[in-house]
Image (cartoon, rainbow, N blue to C red; front, side):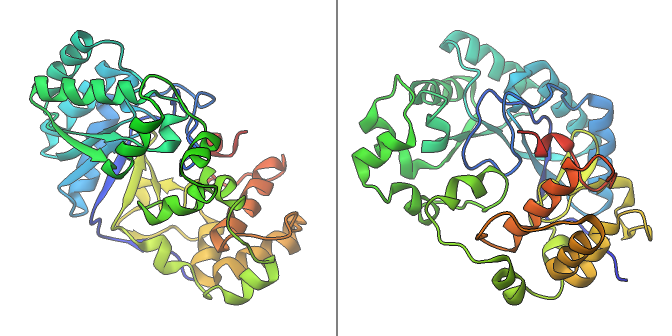
Length: 329
């Protein structure tokens, strides 16, 4: 049975936490208030950055969760990046931490001293369900005053957010009332969203799916290409490498730069060798899985459903089903 063999990292990021005050409907990593408050410490950050450099990548972005929920923790991560020669493309934020201009400028100025140069500021209807747009504007103004560049993600929603009002949060129903009942369905045409994590539940309401049998019939015989893609990789605060965009699957970063040890990650082996068909057969034959949904959006949707089933079983202990918080309600 073949296994993953990742020897070179192209472009990606480091997840410093999974905790977030928001529970956005498109979040790939199922972040939210329910997730543990752990944060990447400076020592492990150095280990992660050195590992990434060895594998050929010299700059990364920093994401979460919400990195700015712990400015001191983020400063330690930025310091570790400087110590290891790791460039930081940008740090992501949803602006939930914003209280007032003076405090925001002080926080950002301190982070600039540690190497922060660009802040990706998220703005979308998903974020606006939890964070008033006025806070986003406040962070943007504070960046300008602190000498930090702003990467707005994405400007296409500014007009919509302004129209509904900047000082309050707004539900998707309000956006649909203002801009059409197909508003949610049209969002992926306006900016990139991967249909994984919480986005599966969000978009299942508006996109047609297929039966498990149809998904299996149309899927490739191997997931090796998706799992081995390093054009947008992530390593999290526990030093776990997330293969491709497969949130909820992970292996130790120490196992990069060569074939994964035989037998250590059996689910990844099965997906690499036989794709979702092989994984599905294993789950049914060995663990008693049966599809509970009439339709699935994709093979990733079916895979996530199988993995969630395995996590709920107390007799299944598979190390690649991580972090377990991804599968929490």
